[in-house]
Image (tube, rainbow, N blue to C red; front, side, top):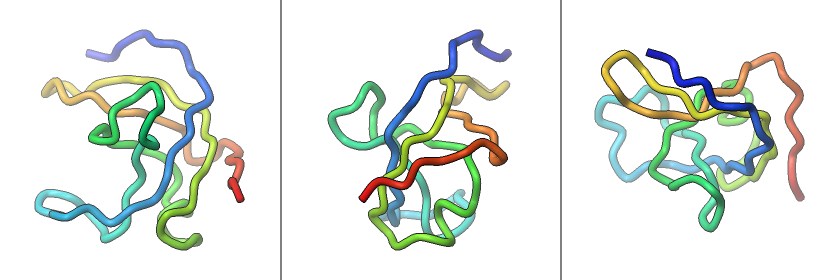
Length: 87
């Protein structure tokens, strides 16, 4: 059951979650605090953001809010799309 939300530019950052139970990998991506989305929201995007840059790096990605069949919402950005790395 996909949502039909528009794509928008979203600022995200890499981080290490306190618990990785049920998650793959050590470093993950989340929306930045103070933005339009909760920092608890997962982000699906290019793995390069979590492997090629230091933890805490911020990025601007083109993403949309969607959901999985089990109901869990997340932000989705195609891994091929360009990413702006913030200083």
